Length: 178
Image (tube, rainbow, N blue to C red; front, side, top):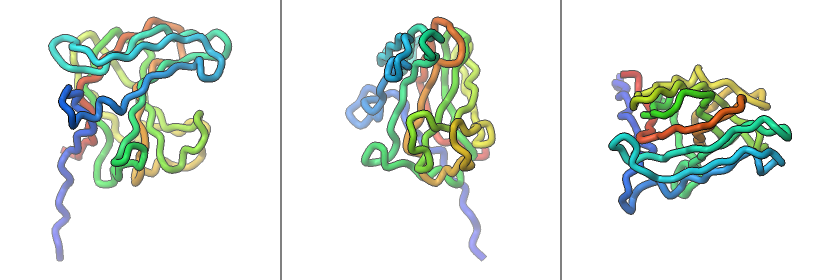
């Protein structure tokens, strides 16, 4: 009988400024793609001593809006996805101004732009590791349960309430049970 070997945490991005970094795969957008008026800005910056993706902007609920987002296509080539079976969820190092933040996952099942699996993301003024188990992600505009065998995109999102967003992400990985 063979013994199952537990997976090693898999780093998705550490926001290193080197040439092998996935940092260049991040894109920033807002509800303006659908007529909203929220304003998003995403930069690579040093935040409290760490290289990080820094998402700032204003989330507005006017004109049926309500989000800003920084998203990263996963896999090689980008968008082909990663197989996250064997992992318990995602882990992030974040800091910023507390607000209404989320992590969104898109999988092979999410075909429409408004479909995703989302989990609330607590943010404080100090760098904090946040672990989000797969069970924390709930489907939006899709009935299929979360299938982590092919996660094609992950997003850092400020949404659902009008506020001034300011959040930084310095590490992102698939987390093991340990």
